[in-house]
Structure formats: C-alpha cells, structure tokens
Image (cartoon, rainbow, N blue to C red):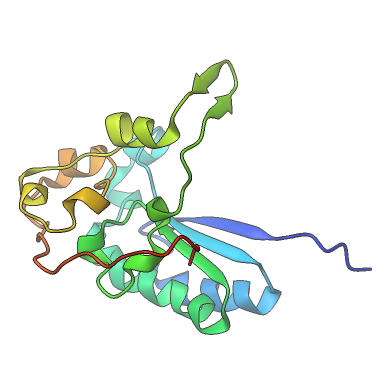
Length: 171
C-alpha cells in the first residue's frame, strides 16, 4: 500500500565514500526519492579527531559530488550540495543548497537559533583572502570554518565570471 510519503535523503560526503557517490545517486533515483542532498562533512567531534581520514579536500570531492548529483538532475529529482563553495561547483551553482535554505529559526534541545543563515555564516563558515576578489563572494558562504584551519586558503581559486541569477524556484 502506497503511503504517499515524500522521501528526502541527506548523505554526508566523506573521504571514504567519494567514489560511491555516483552509484548512490543512481540508487536514490532508482528508489524514487523525492530529493537528495550531498553535504560536505562538518569536521566536528570524531570527524575532527580523524580529520585526514574523514574530510576530503574540496578539490578532491568536487568531481565526485557533481557526478553524484547528475543522476538526480537527469531524472528531474531535486538535488542539492551543501557546504561546497561556487569555486568548486562550476556549472552546478544552481544546486548549492545554501542558495535555497530559507531564513528560518531552529529549535534544538535547550537552544534556539533565531537565524540559521546568520549562525552558519557567523559561526560555521569562513572566508579568506581569495574570497575578497571573487566575483561570487556575495553569493558564497565559504567552506566550514575548520577547513581553512587545516588546509589554508592556497588551494582556493577565486572566480572572475559573473554570478548566475537564481530563480525563486528551488533546483
């Protein structure tokens, strides 16, 4: 009996699952999910303790992430990528989740975050010197703050092309 439930999947991108992302996308499309998101691992807790084993570089992850959302794009499934800046998502900017996350309040156990976007940008994400000259700077939240603490900003290549306009409809 069909229950008419909307199935939404969020998968965390780690060094150990990078090469599986294309097959994961195909699996999720085959299962008929309504939406899936690939989220770069936020290196906290045990992910921070095992950073080198868990957290891929953005440059290393980008081609796998793109190939992981292609099956969904081709099938018309709503797909998104979280915490992957536009400098690594060339050609796939419309699928960056931060473009679509609404301004909202988050209620958590014993804690209220009045503006989730402000918290992400102010506490969770970071921008560095390459971001200052990037034409996409205003549209980008940057990577998770811990990423440049480990890797620095040397591998970040600022974009010089103009940002694309996003419609109000989600990807």
